[in-house]
Amino acid sequence: MSHGNLQKLCLIKSRPQHALTQVRLFPCSVLVREVCGIDTNFDLFLIFHIVRFIGAGSLDLFMASVAENSGSVLIVDDDAAILTAFELLLKPHLRSVETERDPHNIEKRLKSKAYDVVFLDMNFAKGSTTGEEGFRWLNRILSIDPGAVVILITAYGDIETAVRAIKEGATDFVVKPWQNEKILATLSSALKLRESQVKLAAMRTREKLLSADLDQPFHDIVGKSASMAQIFETIRKVAATEANILVLGENGTGKELVARAVHRFSNRADNPFIAVDMGAISETLFESELFGHEKGSFTGATNERMGRFEIASGGTLFLDEIANLSLSLQAKLLAAVERREVMRVGSDKSRPIDIRLISATNMPIHEMVPQRKFREDLLYRINTVEINLPPLRERMDDIPLLVEHFMRIYGRKYQKAHIRVSPNAMKALSEYHWPGNVRELQHVIERAVILSDSDSLQPEEILLKTSMTTQGNGSDSDRSLDEIEKRHIEMTIKKHNGNVSAAAKELGLTRTALYRRIRKHGI
Image (tube, rainbow, N blue to C red; front, side):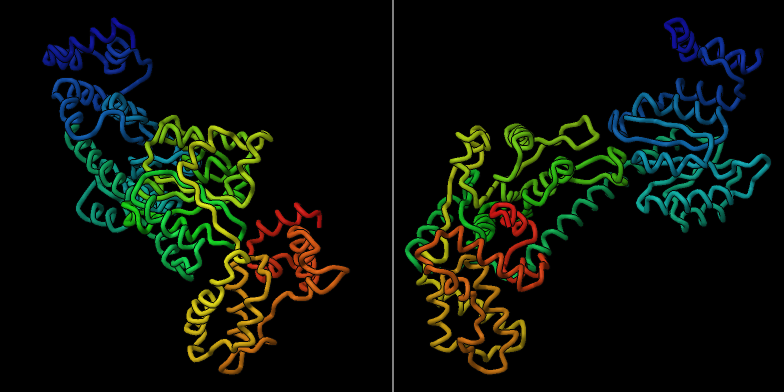
């Protein structure tokens, strides 16, 4: 709108009676062209609402009830005058106001963008007054987005129609010609409802992840050896701080258990613990998974989604296998950790985060820095305190305690609480090398409990991979750990006829972790 036209609108505000006189003396379309610079034919309804909006102080009312520039609205009506009146009333004070004359375009719009509120006319066909079209489109909107906040508008309202509208899922019902104050109050309530729905969805997501956390097979770290006593002391010292922690150790040593223990004894214990396997996230989905995305930001983004950083805000974020990230993804992670904010894919708005970061890897991360495989500045950020977990073969004194722990868990789980481990079976367990560490021991005990028909586990029921150390020309001590691991993986995959999922389960590894070892050893 030009400066001259703006002055004319100000004249209407200061001399409303004069403006109404003009409405009476001149054709409405002429007045709109002269005052607003809009070259189209509008009826008295539009002029009436333009004058009422400016003269009645509706701006102040709206500013008092709705935060400025918050919320996005879609208005669907076949009457151009109605759409323009809505825009003049709402656009200066909302983030986005979009209009649509053809209801057949609703589906396309909803799938490409999320709207906080939809104003929907109830009659589109010429001469129609039943409102059935509006109810049909209302049902279509709710089938696309069950949480949509829809306000129906019609010139033919009655109590029966209003009641039916609410029953079928509409949030509110507005009759034309409306009062601007009514529209603004209705919109304010609708925006608050939408905000509550978004917060509720976030809470449900958190609850789901928290429930998954509580369903873990065990929570406590088991051990009484000197090395584990030192680990416990370190956890006790750092848990109450906000220091970022890096946990190092071979696969199966219990890195995630350490992270969970730190969280449980921290000041954030009542908030979420969110674990992310960085090795299982593809390069293309990294930002979406960690930072979230807006609806329509890429193909398949049918709804907005919180990232793991946002979900963990207030609690602890555990990034496992962090050394598997490429340098480009390391840079994005570093930016988020340093700034303590994230930006969803498809958004230009930064969101603050409040997390305690715990990272873990089984790779020689310090050696990767001079090799330019891991950023030195990111390493400094994630390892304010470093915890090194010993492999099980270096704390063999803990095996009886671990065996007892797992026997108790799986005896209860499989209704075999009476079952015990014979001395010979315990001897076999204590003499095994345990390349898969505690995780392998856990799976060995579970399998033995399931298959046993007696009250006492015997050595023959403890299925250890002893064959890997007896074949070939040398003993365990003659070969490196990598050679033993490679041989063990080859035999397990062969045993399951190439079924990687079954082999991974027996080895106590995830499919992703097993594939990494297959690539590492060239199997």
